[in-house]
Length: 60
Image 1 (cartoon, rainbow, N blue to C red):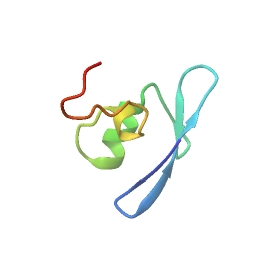
Image 2: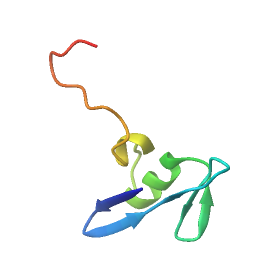
Image 3: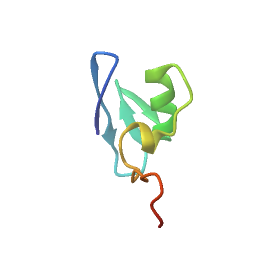
């Protein structure tokens, strides 16, 4: 996964065991990585663009 944030490109490797590697450190969730990158609380899937965007007024 690749995400540009605050002028830097961040790359996350999804591992076969369901964990994630970011800067050589193993994480159990994308949310932990998103929080480390941004310094605030984020949903990991939303931060990395893995969630569908819902338009105002649209029905699902």
